[in-house]
Length: 316
Image 1: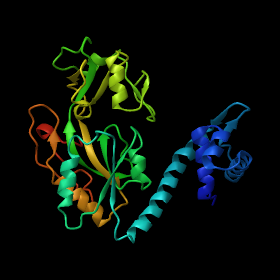
Image 2 (image 1 turned 180 degrees about the vertical axis):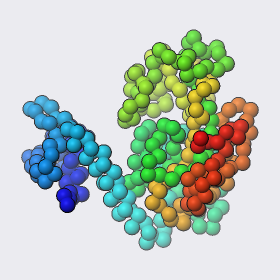
Image 3 (image 1 turned 90 degrees about the vertical axis):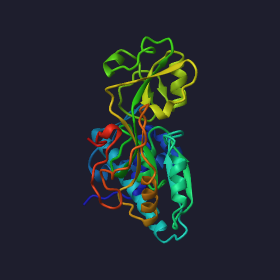
């Protein structure tokens, strides 16, 4: 069986990310000739080329693309295993929660207050991330639990519970053709420029790249693009901008997520506390609704689907 050492995989991932041997060597703090030699050894061992090289260009081959995707998962798994082993014997372990700035729909203070009442409550450290890496934080063990938005964040490898459901709104300048409407449909947005999110591959955006909601709102304000986001992420809106509900956009869900391999009692206690905080629907006029058990059952194995705004199943 062909095997790669973890260090060799780290070397490959660095070059695959940078597509430049010099930058990858600097990132790894090793000499470039040593890195080039290591990559050639890996290619020889696997029997396939991983990179197409020229004097000015480095490009991944199909084999390299496959190894980059799966190799990153493998490194995350190793890192998570090491952290889990260390935490398993740490009686003073605390929880680390990751979220995007402002990405809690106003629920975080209530969750923390509810959790603090538990007899086994530990300290909760709050970590902030960019638009695309909260899943990585959970998979590689940098965070224990996170607040993610569905359908925007990737939930592969994660268990989760829904905390909040809300409509999405189109954010437009106050002078925009859609600004005076009570609501719009997705078809009404055709031809509009949408953002590209930094670090998020794919998507429908064709406009300038933005790193966060603050940058997005600035670009909308100067009429460079519009945005479609969960209402709680953008309200209250700054002067000059208007939020118009998108009636046929699927509900956005704020979920509490964690690595599906993590079954620690302290995590289960935090999840249980979060589920005791009433779920809110982000549509004007809707009151808080009782929590229903979430789709994947969290740490207790219950698989009953939750209901969202107006009784609509959240995971349908």
